[in-house]
Length: 310
Ligand code: ATP
Image 1 (cartoon, rainbow, N blue to C red):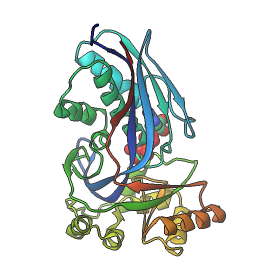
Image 2: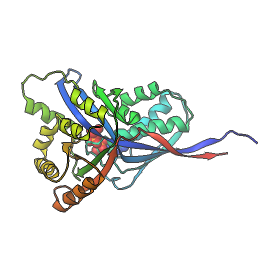
Image 3: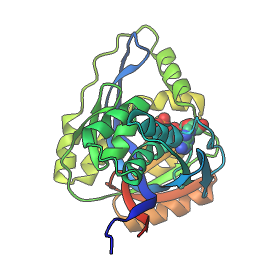
């Protein structure tokens, strides 16, 4: 009896992120800002299934399926096609995204799906891509894609795509206040530039206090160090976000921050009980459209299931 088994479909679980620190440097000639950021993956995840199919296709299901493109602009489709084309594979695949990461919420859901498709196609085709090859394809797809492969907690530099792991202890408990209306990442960066005007902007450097707090598993220390240079720009474009942040800070959160380019507001809590209490307050206040809870750090994009033919 042959032991060769062909994989017909692969499901990859992939995490959302929150930036514990997002320092935005000067705008460079290539159109991007230099960043120094601390990415933290949380267990709010999408499941991306890549299967052999007669043609390219994409289906999106789940609570946040609306507003996700299913054509060639979907980052998961772009990622899958990239692997087929670059490595000379013939054939086509269908991608099904079960979307639990809010869309355009500053949690890098699209990037997470792109990373998942890279991992899924690699497994489906038994392509044997190295970590470096996957990271390099990910960096071409977008600045946040490499971190979704990486997971855990990592320092990002350059456009955020150059990663180094950060030693951490313990777990973090988060509550996320979500908005149905998204914020466009380019619009938030443009607003940041407008608010800064001609003031000199220094080269961004990571905070040593945050690194020490992460190393020690000191959640109060982490909360004190939360910082996002895009926060004022997000407040400027969506002023009532500031009230959401204040409400969380007045109701038990150790710290709070706009996640990435927003409009999600992320609250760090001391433990599960505090997180649940805060969820109730935020939901009752109507200062956001939805409230979800998650813990960190979470694993990067990884295969959770495959379907094989003997
Ligand atoms: P970031 O924090 O990286 O800026 P974000 O969380 O604010 O990202 P995403 O959820 O990644 O935003 O979505 C941004 C836009 O990307 C969406 O409005 C959508 O049009 C497009 N997009 C392309 N592919 C996907 C995908 N697989 N999932 C979600 N959005 C996608």
